[in-house]
Length: 237
Image (cartoon, rainbow, N blue to C red):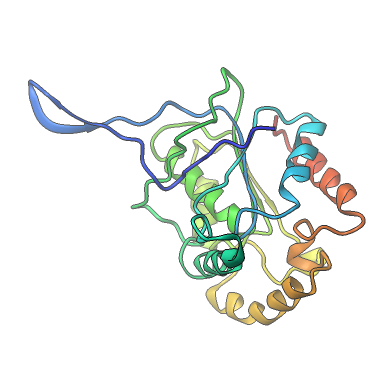
């Protein structure tokens, strides 16, 4: 399965100066087609490939995986955990809020001839998905589905996304029933208070709470299949 390099923070733009007009013109890439999935902090982990395979198995086509925009992108393997922690901090402090000034452009892949433009993200990845959806929708592109799994997105940002007519559906999948201390619409104080429980779940490595789909445990294949089916049933193709 190909895993194309997708860079949502580097703009693919050209500055053109027309003979009759000295104003620069920004040219953006065409509307993406397909479905991109960003995982949790670090954008890596043993769960990514089988999870994407589960999405494909239920009928979600033209899948791509976001592998960049992580603090660990350029770090050696021994230091990858540091990048994961950087991502977690970014999620808790910065990118859970709407970023109107950023260039959240997909530079490669997402080039299916037809079909939906879908963005799916889990945890940290849900915020990358949200920012990218916001960027494209505000520039007139249609985002068919935005799926936020275990997302700590800010309430006002979520409201803005749901109110954008170019984003046809926002699907929020909280994992609070699994014991996740994070949820969509939480406050900054909620984030701070959730940190001890979140750290405990991460270190346990048992697929509990926020990491229900991220840690590989005995019944993970069934969990991934259930998640994929739920997303498919919501209309993602």
